[in-house]
Image (cartoon, rainbow, N blue to C red; front, side, top):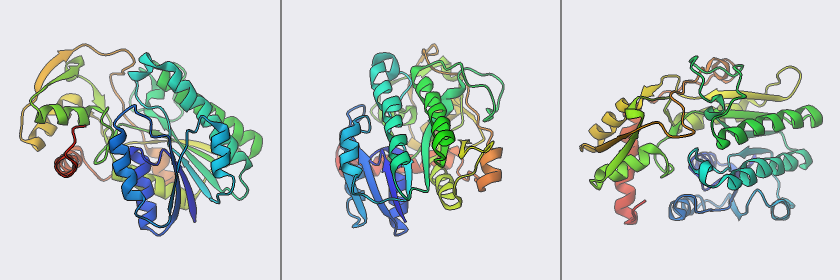
Length: 329
């Protein structure tokens, strides 16, 4: 089996690619290696993947349809896992055009690749829990209304789902969307709170705690996310209402407060944070909480890693990585 992974040098893409390669599968990876966060970290992930003979990498931007077509023209793959996107809620306030190019134009380009690729069996793509906006009726369910996003990032992800449904309906392409809930773990993104908190706590720098820590997040450990993706890839697509497109929540199903998260991180690092309490930021939501009944029923997904265990593994990786690389991310 051969897989195409977009965003292969990204957090989830790297872990998925490595897991598939360890299983003896062939992986084609695409990434534009942009500088939204440390390119050095992306290169470090990529250097591990490039030790595998069955891995091929293309430095390609998915929003560039011509470059994408040229690179993939002679490539053979059975399944696509489309994870490349411009991430981050707050950054969408600063650079909205980046989100339109990557998340809308780029997603359309990948749908066109899927439509025209002979022998393609299935395409998974990344959506986000942010599409639920500021809903207060928890937990979030896939059939909840999600047409009032509070950030441009969320709006682009909801748009991706709508485009995907249209393509599945018109062209009978098998598509599955995954609404990720606050994924964390080793090799994670430096713009995420747990990563930046760790860096600042160890450096005795002040951290900004929004809404006084009074927010709930369904923190989901990376290994659980990868297990869920693999289960869907193994079983294959499931139709919904006679359209080969279905969207799932994929989360821990156990939200924790930011305050508990921070105190647990302090415990794992053996050091107290210097805190500055701030109000809620534009685009943020007070709580996320995944109802995972659908993905549990269809694919047997069951998260296994609690927050303390996950943060312990992350803290251990963080120390080892920085000692080995001698870098400050």
